[in-house]
Image 1 (cartoon, rainbow, N blue to C red):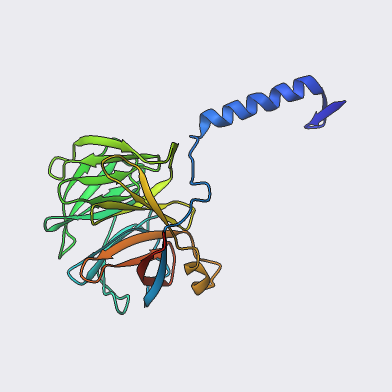
Image 2 (cartoon, rainbow, N blue to C red):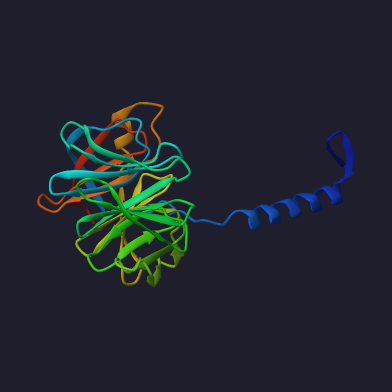
Length: 270
């Protein structure tokens, strides 16, 4: 039996060898990233409110502070950091990144907003009220999600590793690998620190992982797959964006290009 590539017959043995080489090259070219294999969610949720959200916002980071939403958005030439009025979705202040940068996660430190970028390994420091740039810094990896536990900035880079940074020097102080049992959990994206745990969007899924920041162990899962059904628009992208209201204990969640932002209350089921 022969195979045919570009019109030329190739003996079966050589064809199998070529296919094997192709698989090896592909595995070297792209990192083997793992996603959770149907984890058992430990939380259900109730939608408490829905709010308008900019359907052109490619949401990368979300923070709720003093009654205001701070949002970081991505895509080159469209990346921003912005202040958003929760009830109306109105953008009250916006800073546009230079077109070469792809904006990613945001976090609050002191009276500043910190934003990282995807592949440029550069972060920006903004005044919390004016969004004027106060400085820049370097990171040692890609930037995906960002949050703060009050003592450190916590950075995700799309792998199973979380990086802890000194919030004043931005130097890496430690790392932790996120695991669900014995399995590493990769594609970790937007982050939010809540009551001693890290909540993390897992890219290209509707899942949020609850992570122990000391051990990296996954403590539980939140499945938000029902939220997209409430939007019913083909143009929406993946779930991404977690903010926490410490007064109510509710979460604000949205996604890339979603026209709605949801306020949800978690209900423990297991």
